[in-house]
Amino acid sequence: MSASVSRRTFLGIAGGAVSVLGLVACNSADSGTTDDASAASDDTSGTTYIIATDTTFAPFEFTNEAGEFVGIDMDILAAVAADQGFAYDVNSLGFEAACAALESNQADGVIAGMSITEERQESYDFSDPYYDSYVCAAARDGGDYQSLEDLRGQTVACKTATQSASWAESIAEEYGLTITYFTDSDMMYQDVLTGNSAACFEDYPVMAYGVAQGNGLTVIATEEEEFATPYAFAVLKGQNADLLEMFNAGLANIRESGEYDEIVAAYLEA
Image (cartoon, rainbow, N blue to C red; front, top):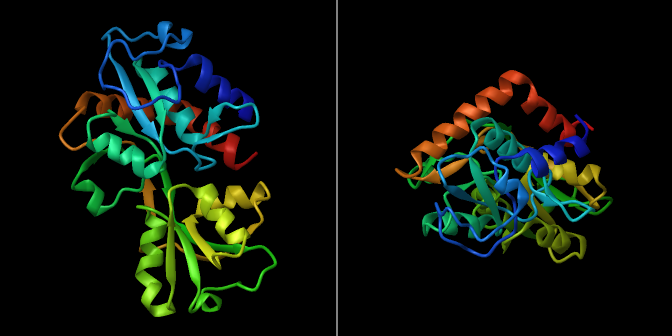
């Protein structure tokens, strides 16, 4: 599947309209949108689910050159919704804010490259995993920092509340790292490119995609064991069991049909 076909799946076929909204009430038949895709949904329950996500986490969610909000997560959500016949709106907030929206009942679910961790399982119920990931450190391409050893005593950049930040925190004392936190990946990368931070810590598939797109960085280290975790869709613990069940059923169906593989290949193998 080409990236353009993948985006059409997301924009035209999905069971829910997708828009960048302010925080709105969950499980409402009137979500405040009049998008034709929502009106054309096969949903019969009258429910439009509010799904919170990140803003810049390519290739899982990002805005393309045409101004469309796309990515692996967005296409998987669209395909699952189409398969299961439910309507949804996407609320693009940033990762930390997406989690806060879920915890304050202002979103029904989160799909944002969220790693399953023991700590998060105390607050969220997770779907079956849909992508296996690990973490890495990256520095400016052609710069002085080419390994973790080179980072001793340096300031590094991390994204708040992420698995890659947890890795940096776990080795901060050993390497004498000072950590600066950011709310989105683009700001974190820019801090490295301008020289304010020696390196940044990120999920490997996200960084690998950015490097391939010419973001000016290069991977200098990876951690593929302790901080390697799968991504999953999340709902607040004990809530929205029906939505979680539909996501799992739809995910199984698109895996079986081959659509899942086409979605991932459109972004990571093209």
